Amino acid sequence: KAGVTQTPRYLIKTRGQQVTLSCSPISGHRSVSWYQQTPGQGLQFLFEYFSETQRNKGNFPGRFSGRQFSNSRSEMNVSTLELGDSALYLCASSLLGNRFTPSGANVLTFGAGSRLTVL
Amino acid sequence: AQTVTQSQPEMSVQEAETVTLSCTYDTSESNYYLFWYKQPPSRQMILVIRQEAYKQQNATENRFSVNFQKAAKSFSLKISDSQLGDTAMYFCAFMKQGSEKLVFGKGTKLTVNP
Image: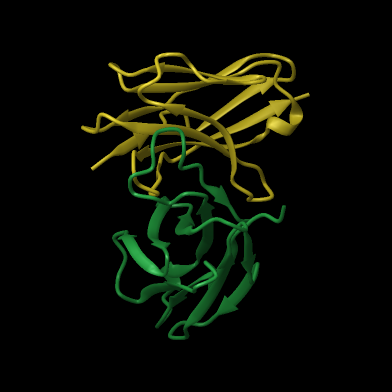
């Protein structure tokens, strides 16, 4: 069973550019979440999508956006890149992703991440 | 808002010995899950163990076990018979029931020495 696939694995951009990262969840997983990991701030939640709808959003500026497609694949976009956007961006998927999921569920499986460097 | 605190930025242990990583959290939620994830140098975040807050019994997964103290809001991870492959960053994380959002601690860098 294939895991969570993130592309690209590495990319370098310059300030002011925009970037799009892609995430393919495990087959059958309907919820996709994104996290930003930096040495200073640690792991921070960006947003979560379920059935093409953003259900939850972290405390990030509007330059960070995302979407989910009907096949559950997700993309996130960062516009007008800043040096501080340099980070490892992690995607995670989960099986049920239902707000009313009974106890015992909600295990997130992570991808290997996309390492973004902004120069 | 929930917070997760890992007070040990770095730890080291000799191969085959036992080590305990600490984690405390703060929440007003009654139903939630707690997790330990490891992130080796390869960067892949891997689930180590999960605990449902309503369960009094501590979770165990082979060499990994937790000490869950709900009243104290403490969730420590014990690694027995440490192996070189256990070298990684370990993150404690909180998720309230019905949510897919993880709140992570800052992590503990564990080094297992031969």
